[in-house]
Length: 537
Image 1: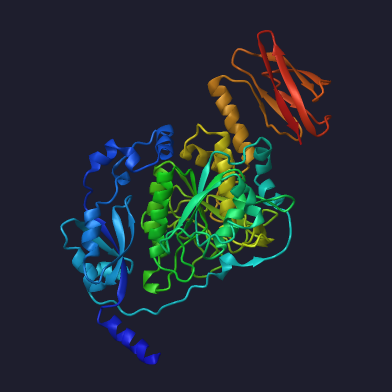
Image 2: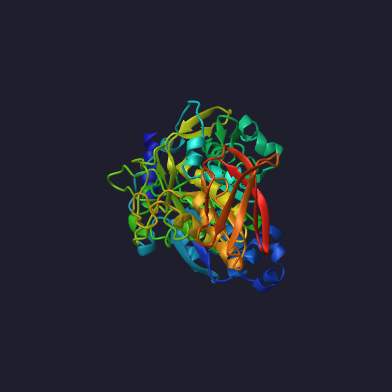
């Protein structure tokens, strides 16, 4: 063992150690042909998402020129590990000397080493100590039966669920370390029975076996799509899911950032609406590859740049803020939470206090991070065998949030990703006074939906009753030409329970005297009549 280690040091000193790098290309060929045939690049659902949000196709959508990749593959000592059409780059591995020769190819724009020192000088880099990164914090689970109500009710998400806004029609892609048990465990049975697992891919192993690897992805999915009565209900139990393995739990290497971007491009092509990534990168096994806080500006890290492009394609990217908040050396958010448009999610406990491990902001360029908070301590999850337990980490606050965003977007299908992002942030309890520990705070999804429905009603001149469901007071928004009317409320067998005059100047009605249940309403005025259903909680 000692002899082999000495040989490694000798090779490193001579500059032949394997290095990771990104090779960027100058252009793309046949661009117009692809733009003229968009279905050769994207699914119809992806194109519809672009059309609905008025997003035009551009050069980022064009595949990389295959001849460029083939020429680099043919070079001795070079291994191509991943590719990104968005960034027009490939991830390669080889010796520093061999990688530097690639910069001389006429179609190559630059070679960007993961070891930043190599980008500043042609000198042989000093050998760096290999550090094993402990990933146990994000995967530890303590089995204890409980109820997942708190992590939903903290966000007032149950109000959306009671109105049948449960993520139906929305597609979420999960980038994680593995999904064992999703194809067999009981809490995922409802997803399987309803064909809500749309597929996936293992980018680490380059095969279709995504029901393998570390169970972290299984835990993450359970907070959104899990369903076991009286034990665990996810925040988006009726959304559809793609499961992508991009994290190699046996190592920490920049290739995982490249695999994430490749998976995000696949998600885009499939028409995905939301990407959840309960992953964050800062330190790597090889410390020469480590990120620095100065790079947490949303525009430097490969993965963060990819996440920003994903947003520009019309998707929402939700990411864990990170579990480094207790660190004395670096308590800040990690990649890709630093990206400008990513919704970075921190962790609070069951009574809404920030948990000390939750990574903090700001980004290096002084933007508020994280954006929002959700329960990340004692989050209720399912493991790969179907056992319901609790786990800690922003790994779980992020998907809890992502599922609620899917449910909200279902309720507001006409909204763009930017509008949904804004609505969530503006409905958060610290929106008027954000800070770098809580961001804008904990969103109230009932408030988010109600405010937007009212705004939509005013813009479209519609009648609306909100909030619905309600625990007490309802408010009436009248069409422009209606000033006053009479509200009648009946039980389900037709008995009149209430009658009240409501006007533009007095639009509220208290339902405090009514028992919990479902009621029918009818609003009548001289030239207007409207009927509907109200749920009293």
